[in-house]
Image (cartoon, one colour):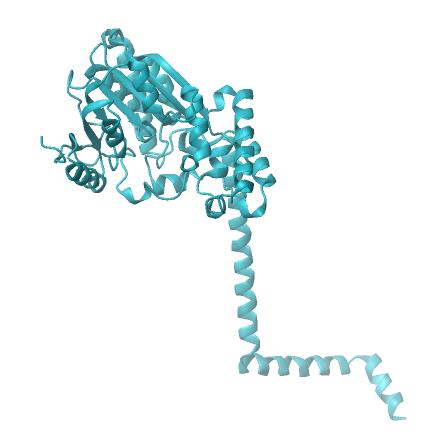
Length: 398
């Protein structure tokens, strides 16, 4: 395959494992668009705020990889960086979006890079064995529905001395953040001055499925599944439980001047995030991890069959529940109930407003006026017919 060539290898899947709309990617500003966040992430991975994750990995692996496979490669910036820094000689990128692949292929061709691309649904594609000595997952696995199948395929495709390196979101599925983390994020956000404050809104599962059915589809399964098929050689929790929701897509924060005041508040947010991660090590939303294949597990047919059945049952369940895989948490349920009550109240108010409008319309009609005059005259006659009123009228005449 020539550099920049794109080949179609699969079609759309039947469940919630692909996103037809690639416009949602590379849109908006994320927490790691901030230099302070990247320095902190780098420090957590390597101890050096200026060393990026792949530079650290290159030092750890101590080799140049002949051919890399990039999962869900998007517009190709990751593999371009890896080639530019001498970590890999060439790479193949896989993604479902032909639009993004076309962008990646055009850039690779323009720059003369040894990069090729394949359009494929990563959940169904079969990876050729022994073809790659490195597989890269950069923010890709949290979009994978068939997480066990894909990681098993990666384990099978890599040689004994191959590596699988990852930098990914590993937090709660569909961004259903845990209650204590959300409360802390809310508290920190309230401390910010208004010109930096986030419009915090707890993620809606329904909305997330509609916008991107693959977003954080099984993110909480990534680490456990990785440990099934790989020997962990590197792992670094990167936090984010507090800072990520406060910073990501925070229009005020990114629009504010990059002055000392803004930087001080960013540091305060990150300090709160560090503190929460230290107190709750299992709360990390992001992680860097790398490992070598555990080939022995591929011979354990009973365990493989059990994991495969578990995955099939999970996907079947989602197909009958609108893309929801798991029971919603208490916070999500409370917010759903609040929204339901709000809608019911709005509905009642709308019905009342309609009834009032109908009454006003009736009162303004000639028919209503005529009926009202008749009723009023009958009422006056009935009142005047009472003994007390007749007696008062006679006294008044005398």
